[in-house]
Amino acid sequence: MIKGNNIVTGVGSYLPERVVTNDELARKIDTSDEWIKERSGIRQRHIAAEGEYTSDLGVAAARRAIEDANMSVNDLDLIIVATTTPDLTFPSTASIIQEKLEMRHGAAFDIQAVCSGFIYALHIADSMLRAGPYKNALVIGAETFSRILDWEDRSTCVLFGDGAGAMVLSTANDSDSGIIANFIRSDGRYCDLLYVDGGPSRTQSVGHVRMVGNQVFRRAVKDIAIAMKECAAIAGIEPKDIDWFVPHQANQRILDGVGRQLGLTSEQIISTVAHHANTSAASVPLAFDVAMRDGRIKRGDLVMLEAFGGGFTWGATLLRF
Ligand code: COA
Image (cartoon, rainbow, N blue to C red; front, side):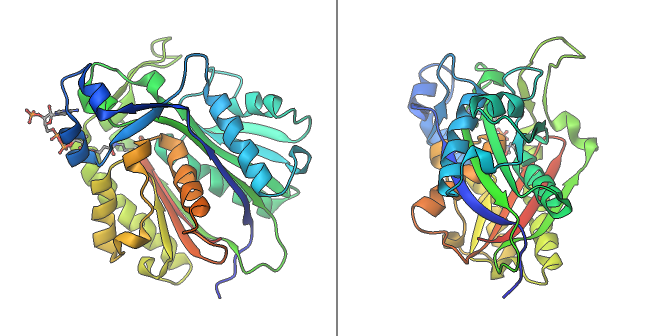
């Protein structure tokens, strides 16, 4: 058995109550359930309520992950939040979550790698736990992406949703489980293909998501497949040797394309895109939690996580659960 190191001791997720179907969107903008389903696989998305913030979604997912780990907030040393939709420009959403959890010790900070944020955050947590002196890191992906969508731009607004997912990552001596390999990449040449047209320094505003969808699509399939091969190669295996593939949930056609390139069966691919749409940094831990709770992902399984997003950024994580 391949040896791991830091282990995922708890997983949790949270989705806002309100569900918005494709048909509901089609009553407001020039689109249709048929177009959205055919091009992306998306049927519905969850949207945060007024007054419900990224930190609220993140804290709800975090509490479930901490409970799943049989831990209390006192056991945590670190909170790392991956988000593109922070409550405020500062302080970090991680600091706000630390306060909501009444955690009076440790360190909390945000990282920004858009839809790849959770993979980046997991790599950072894994490295910090290996370096010490930390024992337990709470890693959260949380987004209220609906707040940065242009609801009149049908080419983007139909594709995203809100949600949060979290994992507790813990040091372990002599465990057969845990994170085996991390692989992250970025290429700033593609900033113009997927971005937000506002920010504190340039416009003193938040801005809206802009995307050249078909070009993003092509790069995503190619780069995700490379990331998975590279990550598997670090562990000396092939992507098809994994039990489960938990991808970033952007588009069912991307998942199918990557699956075909790597020889994965559709049963190996965890897909929640139909129900959650693209929840950016939240999508990977959300999908993991769904598949763990419905009994597909079990302790001892070999799982590969993967994400791709603005920047471009992309990456993969191989772990034995
Ligand atoms: N409803 C109906 N028609 C729409 C539409 C909508 N919501 N959005 C766009 N269209 C139209 C376009 O205007 C275009 O019309 P035209 O041919 O008359 O100009 C047509 O549909 C095709 O557009 P195109 O962009 O070529 O479609 P596509 O097959 O590439 O699918 C995406 C569009 C966005 C679904 C697809 O490109 C995609 O998923 N890209 C990756 C997005 C992604 O994953 N982003 C996040 C990465 S983290």
